[in-house]
Length: 616
Image (cartoon, rainbow, N blue to C red; front, side):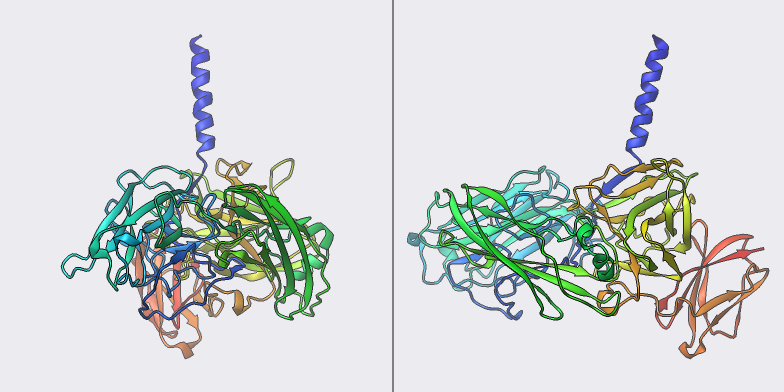
């Protein structure tokens, strides 16, 4: 009996160890990235102060990641259609612990709670109103959404601005943090005589943990009008809700010549979106779409249909995927199919802004499973004695030349600038009867983070020619103790096969995490139009010699750029030597202990790919 008990304990211990090898984390920053989706909205006004009048309405239907400046005076919240669960209509305002630049309000103190995001209306003229006009302010809110839950000490608050010069802002509503809940509507009467003035404003504010972007709130469907009552909670609106799907069966984007080589195999059967009937009765909805190629204006397709949608129900609407006749001369030229969906229904008496939604199906010089916008971060929990590997399966329909990789890094606290990794390309991996067949590996990359919080591009020193068929691309994190837990963007919109495999205990396993890890293989040239993080300009125009080295080294680079900056780092991530030097001078390294070091080199403001040196 005792042996059985020990065996059971060991089994559960092993199970826990296996389950803990991969994990998800908050993004730790906001991610305003183009997703190929756009929406009808009112034109964006200038940032100058404007005075609005009642009725006021906002459901955050727009093509910007920031609030509409004709209605709002600040830019701190994130306008998106990714973070909500079952929103009232497409688009919400997401509150978290990071500012309008996408970084924490306080990057140093992880444990502090403070007022974080705010959303402040433009002034609204209430001077001609009184309590007898029955003004009601209403909105919907949701904690957590698709992010991480706000804790009980976190909160979402609403303030009204009174006609007072000493303390104009007064809090009229507050709710404490909690786990995910459906959207709830709040009704607030405006009866205080001090509110009826020409400079009235309202402001949403959240209180959050600073260094953790896991205190999410979503706000949607704000209405403010006269002649309402406490029971005026019905939303008489039929609106688009979900993002339209991509036209491809598996990829979200791929090179056009790869698509044309196997159209029938790459196309999905349907392209679809969804419409929500927020009314209290069933409605018959007429809807349709038009399609064109954006760059040439070539008409592609179109169609109309109708459906009866029950009350308070979301229905998927779809059309068969069409064939196309667009031809291009360059193999990696950008081609973009625009599918514009619209609602035409006499029963829809609500706002018209959310009656149109557009998905752009982009074909370019990369393969992707993600839509460009992460909701969380993915990482491996590594062991100090074993490297961690990620491999993402792809396929080609015709041979092609792999030029590099684009990676979306999730930010960490502190940032992972010293976490070295390698990029590996495999013909096959040892999973499901396969064997590891490494085609190419480039070492000593480090993560980088652009101010736009987007992809960072790594151009291979040597292109890799790939045959048609399956291949894998991914990363290797060395067993150095300083390269653990490297965060990658995770797009939660992929709910089917994520094509991700990982290796932590010297064995490849299929990922159990739902979502697409945002690593994209790049083909052809690195076109400037798709560059969000800079490609190193002088990555291949410098070298260090002699290597191995005894006592001194010299950097060889184009002297037209003047002095260059160097940093030498040991295997534990510590800076052991740094400075600036012209190309003709030697740098003494006799004080360094024998071993392996990484040299970071910056020329003309651009950091090049690090080089490994061996000190004898």
